[in-house]
Length: 319
Image (cartoon, rainbow, N blue to C red; front, side, top):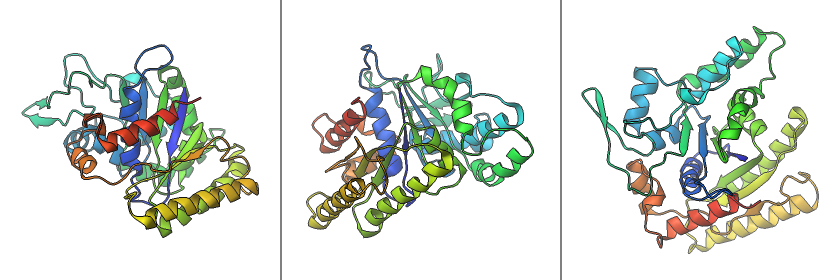
């Protein structure tokens, strides 16, 4: 199984859109046993964009903010520090028998029931699960050091996710983590738990230079965490491949990454990784589906957005 963190400390680069749709693509591909891949999405960003996309804002708000019956990743962190409790599958979001599936279900509440549009028969999403995020994670992140100090001999601040989620690894083929656009504790935990890091970027001046800064920062954290990081992919998003400026920025970044690798400035962090030449281009269709809480797998197989996502997902399945 593989664990990927999607990371960029610059917001607005299409990171969450890419992650959610890659998760949907992988969930509809077969693993080595000929079964649909089992996918777990972990939302470690307090903005909860991945959770809202997958569940719909109404469902997320009701169970996370109003009823508070679904624990967030922050709740799991706090509970582990206090009681040493691991995350159990029954505590996070997955399909329930005789209930509408909230995963891409676009559910609306009528009285005490949730009603949703019926998923196409070929996309039931029973093998795609979610550990959601919530606003309470801001307090957990800010208070994490204090929580740990109240429990001497406890885990390192960046290793809690590894402790609480490691028992779940045998249940999934892929775990995809949506990181917040910062380097606080939830991001540190995410990259420490991961096998590889995926860096989405918008091919403009600020975002491309930010990719290089991010890699240098990761190199510093290798020393702090005593862990070697691996970049699985650097993927351009939210662009039009027909615009020469975007193509130029992608090519420039590729040259800079090759130079970093050649000069060993970031060690072997990029070894075996790739810069996707096209990535996920900006398209009205994916924005429309996102507003409906639906993934790009709804698009026709010859749609360019779906083709791009299928191509990227195939790279993730390469050994």
